[in-house]
Length: 114
Length: 342
Image (cartoon, rainbow over all chains, first blue to last red; front, top):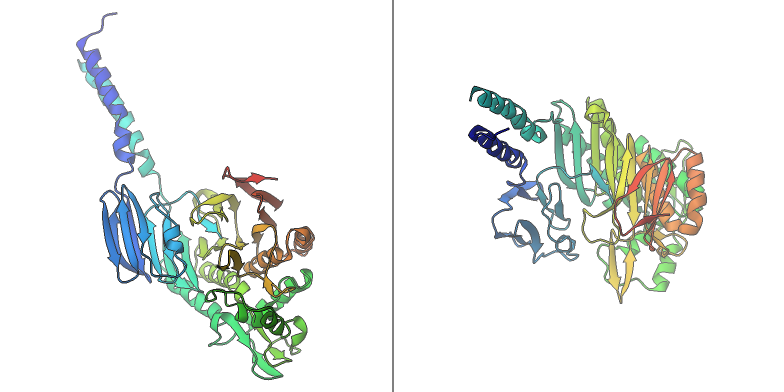
């Protein structure tokens, strides 16, 4: 059997088609929502490095697609200890200052008992 | 060439929809409300179509839980100023107190709401060093089931000693979870997931009869999303008590919020955390505290009695050797390699 030009085009097209799912299910476009006492302060994209001062409570830092909380004014600093978050459904919570930083989307579990 | 175009169209017809399939699955309609109450972060998710204001329903139920004893009692802690002082109870408050004393009885006092003078003394949230031994002994002398009594109709508590009191903080979230679940069911929601700072109550089933998957917090990790394993449940409360929740550190020693009524100080034993699964949130909340305070030696007997009485359906115990014991008919899987099931 001889390979025709059409066959080559077909193979190239098929190969390209394989990548289509990537464009639809890619992980781009993640956002972190920052709320203080239930009020939304900011919605920040994780693909842009930035830092933002939240009142006198602390600083939100986005770096390399991950977000963390720094210079927290609370005594226990559990929000800082949570470290960097980047997966959908992850959150940083500061109880004393009533801050929630949450990455939109669903996590694997419905809730965590703690 | 015609054949080629036909094949190409065919392939496109197959490839494009499959490429999108992850996004085009029929997704279930969910709504989530998040708010701060009961000294913690609360989140309520409801499933199904319903126009009722579920956030208001949830917040109203929580407000009811926060003022269960009196409209002014802070953190649901009440201490009598004079001998024979009385406190009138609502029907719900009576139910909470009766259940709390049921757990007192089967746990030999490992769960005791009359330790109010001790919880007030320890005040874990604001302390930086432990109280002295004499302060602990003094506060302890005001504690115990014999320091209070009930009126015949159970609607009034009588404090037999000035300075005695009750602290329902350890069952308040369990009660609140039940109250929210009940109110949302009455409002017509078919399923919901109520998370009050890690006290989880679920009701109904999600789309396609899918049950809820609850993670159990990794007690040794600072991260709030690190888990030991997952539990598959329907219609129940899942409550975890652990020494990692609220504590302060003094001279290298950790002082956490679960006071052992027997010693008057934070419970010291091999448990890292105790998770209880029960149909009733008040029992789940009280028993997780009771089992933690009782310690590993007495836990088995206590769980057996509580299960026989129908107070709980199962428990997940994690000790400081990272060993996980699953008791009862539970669908639990250890997903964290740092832990092993025994």
